[in-house]
Image (cartoon, rainbow over all chains, first blue to last red):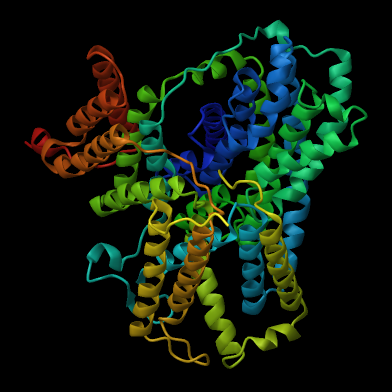
Length: 483
Length: 156
């Protein structure tokens, strides 16, 4: 019952967050972290995933009705979704995108159920060299696949790694970069940092941006019915989107965003009437919206099977699980399989809850998009302050949050992506430990890694990633990275 | 080639990041990098410092080349003033909470934030402040049983 309630709350909150431009799932998940401390680990995981999942549903609402993407992953939906609204078919677009999302979410959960245990079994063969090589590949892909500037992504990774070293060294107990401060000796806590970078930064950004009230199109329940032709044209894009999204979720990076761009590009490419894309083609709505939901489940596979998050929301989930002393990875399936299977069961139900919520309540959720940030942000500010303080009853944490928020504003202003920093903070300790262990194993050399097939494979991939980054530097910038 | 000056906000920020990277490296050397066969506490931080400094230098180079035309978040005097008030409201919350308690400071902070974000009049901010304080009390005190400072008003 508790898990069902957590699933409902997470999905509901996630849908609201998805509808509201600016407030993203990462910020909301971070704010919920202190609340999940009092829950069993699987309940917390279910709630956080519900938020992420729900935000993919909610993001499409404002994209279609108002031409404002509630979520970065719904940017593409604006292109054809809003055109459908202008033609009076907004309700059908909403309905089919919800149905497509449900279908894709189900496919994603089935894929997670099938692949995660198998990957976890394979990961039992991983030793420190394999993990080190895999982390190197993951970081290079994260930096190279998206973002206008790989160099900025590398700076942020470096910063994240460095922040993770502040405090007591895990290898020999030496205090590092503490500057004699009691607060810094215990390290920078993840939650205040993430709340600052995602939540407080957003509050500061909203405070300086001019607010333009959205013009909301009205949608009645009877407008939700698609025509037979619209339903028929939605089937294949939903199928394709599900598969595309699922496999994109396995890759490092903002999987939900990338999957929507890829799905839209493919639908346009294979369409018999590509010139009509941008004028209200339902394929351009259903495909991307299916892809982003399936990508959420795909990205859970490396998180749960390997303990390695490939996106900011999954990094936050990893931090949440660690707060419960649960360490995702191969041993999760042998030592705590109940966590995984409870999560799977809840996601099936959560997917259904989201479909049942989104269709009849579309008017309610759309109205939420019209709430003025000036009314919402003060409330969010206090939740950030009190929530952060409540973790350790520490004012130091709240100061860290505020400072992170100010620095996050500077990062936003000069377009340094924040997600690599967050992932670097979460994965820094793991990277350091595996680096030390590998060096000790191979007596100070990293070359013997090439003699281990799995590690060698990842290293070859890393070289390919570097070559790709160099080629891209010649070609031009890639799509913007934002969560 | 359209070369830009380094003395832009982005340029100065990148220079500061590269200086940070060098400082991290210096700190790591002080901690002791050790040898490759017996890595010290400073080895990984040294590597991170190299990553930060080297990547920041590349960013500076692209900044000078004029390749990065950054236009996000234009900031004028009014914007800076608003930011300052928002940050001071949050800082004030921290400083005053031990004395006034979390409910009173939350009430005041929400009122100040609502006014600075443009909510007109007094009634709406007051309702928002009261509603937020009540919601915080119910959520954190009653539902989550968190012991938050009550200040002078909670003593006795």
